[in-house]
Image 1 (cartoon, rainbow over the protein chains, first blue to last red):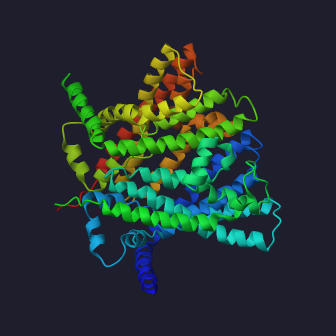
Image 2: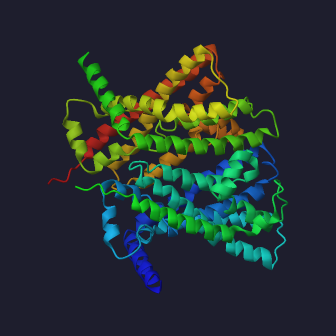
Image 3: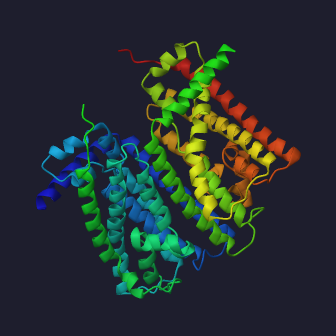
Length: 267
Length: 265
């Protein structure tokens, strides 16, 4: 375990050094990641130009959801990566190389995709969070601060697990890399909005099958001191860490099962 | 006549290139459908509080969402860098020495690709939307106009893509140019939200730019928002933008080719 952490740090360190070699390119990339994520938020503003409330949510509350989801998304993207090159590895058979190395395959996929420029998007999320927290009157206490600290790591684990399961489809569909987008960008888009605006079947699917509602929605209800418009048990508001651990275990199992179905392209 | 025959052959290759990856198509349909659901419910939540936004009612807005998802790949909204890559690796030199115009080649190729994406990436998500939501359907005349408008949208889109790809003549790394172009075009085309939802000043900016011709215009035609002379007018605006962008593309190509230096090998 300690050994893996040392190795991970070395892998990531090497990537950071190489990315900082082209300083201008790096700065431009980080800036464009930062600016582009504002388009997303501009969409939220345009929606609220037409309505005072989305369901029972005000623009400040949605901004809070948006910020927490964006920060978690960006950090997941930074730490876990986007599984972008991974379908390519499965397609051309280079996944073989990962199999013969004396480390877990998932560890290698995750450790080899660290892009520092993704911090640009996280920064944008932080700015929106500052706006949301500054304009809302949140009854801060120890419990709420603890929740704010815990919900981001939990969200990262949930996002990361969902993305891992989504990317496993690549083992069966060699050129189906775009499935991943539904889980990554789709998951983020969804977590940015309150789930009570979705119809009940979609909501159930999101809350219990793909646990995206635990990324932001439930913990935010507690922090914002908002009664659940769906009237679900309050216990759910505190369940994100447990959901995160369970999704992580499931993702690990699915990955293992999927790797066994890998057939090298050979040649 | 011979030239048209050549265009036809190139277009067939555009179709075939994408038909070769059925799983990629399935994955895309799945992703578009998921986004369609999310967007449809967000817009419906707005209509919960008011019956109209501009000249749209809830049915119009939901139809808009599913048509936009159907058009994403048809108009290649998420970018295309094939030309830029050919400029960067020098293959463009071969293209320029062929007895065939590169812009015309890509236009023909794209007009072969677009129908494949419209049928295989567009129809299925739209059917899912049609089964689960109350959508609006066009009159036969509007349907014909819609297809004309989609063809024009593809040409406008290619004209624009050709331009930002040409930046590769001047920059080694065009990632920044591409991301900026995509962001601006996605937002102002109406792909992210219908322009009808924009505040008046932002809508004015959007309508002064060519991007509305790529998404908003064809969908408005489907929804029957333009009639008679106005319909002809809006199609003419699309055709106008197509000509302007293709013209600019020609100029850029000529300027770029003049300064092109290929690393030998």
